Length: 389
Image (cartoon, rainbow, N blue to C red; front, side, top):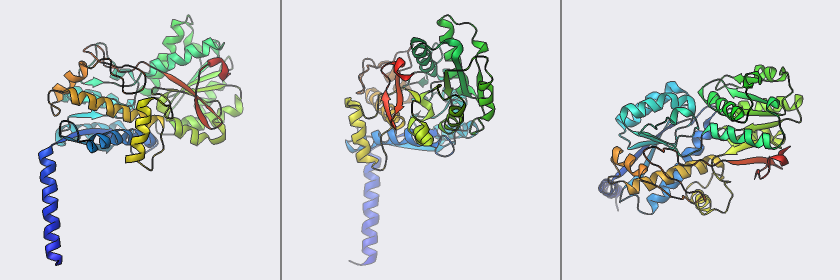
């Protein structure tokens, strides 16, 4: 066969494939996230999880004959980039929804855009209150438990283990993310009868930096030497802080919220990771729960170079719950019908042993926290807070 005939044949096959794709239909889903910069392990992890589930669904015929396509734009964890990305996805790409965005600073600008454009923002990788209004914003729906719930679980666990309220200190990112976790812990302490929370040491650092020395100095100047430090930050500055703080406070507990990026934190700390606690909003990624086994199988099939972790598991669950709502929608390409489908979903277990659901007044799927601790270079479920001391 001549080269020209081959080219014509190839071109014809390409046109045929395009025609079949067009006939089948395509559902475009957006994401603006940190694919570069200090939080890139989070953005890339969530993206990998969502794409793995979408790939599995597409391999099985899609949603009502439509294939799923994720359009992910990089914002570097910076609000100034996230806002135009959000508008591009909604106005230019015509996505049916935006899923899996990473971060509180970016959510502060993307949530108003989602509401303005009447387009769903689902499953953002943040536990901040800006996405959890009461009553909830129609166009903002969450999978994960809040930062307030994570830090409240820490406070409850520490107090049950015998740590006194005045022995707790805070290390947080100096923005809305850090504020959300800090305020949640303060509220939990007050609800447990401790009102002098303003006296507790609180060191802060600037977002997208590792300038943690000033924050450490603030904590070391505390009137009462801290026995536990609740941390609300990204993995790089948190690792830098822990490494320095362990030299001065070798017996202290270091507790991180899920956003830190557990595997990235462990890897950054290396031999200094022992005993570090991280609260999780998903089960352990090596558990034998059906949804988690399915997740590992999807990674093995569609993301062979990726090792399982908590972040991509969350992305996978976000993708799975999103598709479940799409399947229940009267029109999978209708933004309003998709919201209605979410609000009618109840008692659905994505395979994690926890039933989830939504309603017009409930826009958060899960309320569950899974505390973990690093021991011998591995993540273990923290069954007893006393054992962490």
